[in-house]
Image (cartoon, rainbow, N blue to C red; front, side):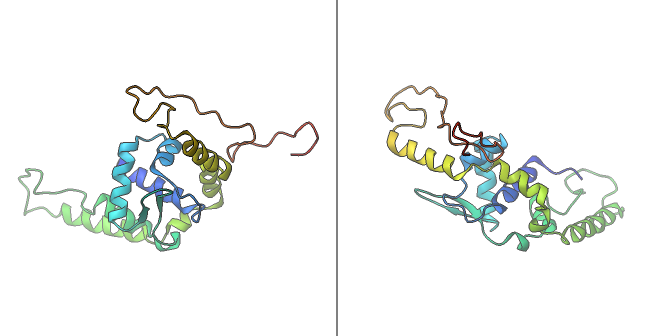
Length: 197
């Protein structure tokens, strides 16, 4: 069975939200898009769908974002996949098949898929976050300093994210320059000249 891209990205979002769950400010669609290199428009659809299914909670307004709706241990992998992928391997009525009504293959496939999802339900989202996975996800989470710096910059600018006045007709993207003391979690601090890190 090969997962659709939609399901693959949905699982990545759930894993990302499972780490550092009480973070303030919460995770945003823009952050997910940047960290996973996935189209923002595609992520908006994924987040909307997962909110409708009750997997995540969306927080609107200033300082808003998305969070997991429950503890990661309450998310069964099989249930998530079945909800996102569906349980039928083949739809005999969708495909114009001359064997419809006289073939037992659909029943065999359905029973096999049911067993597949039952086996996956032995595992939760928390089980998927072994130490290696958790560290990998944490490494792509921005640090608190980065989040605060971004919030301060946007607040002070009162402009569009590219730095042009809000009513400007053209807006060219400008590179974001972070202060030297802000780094990703995967970057190690370089010792300063005084010997303190």
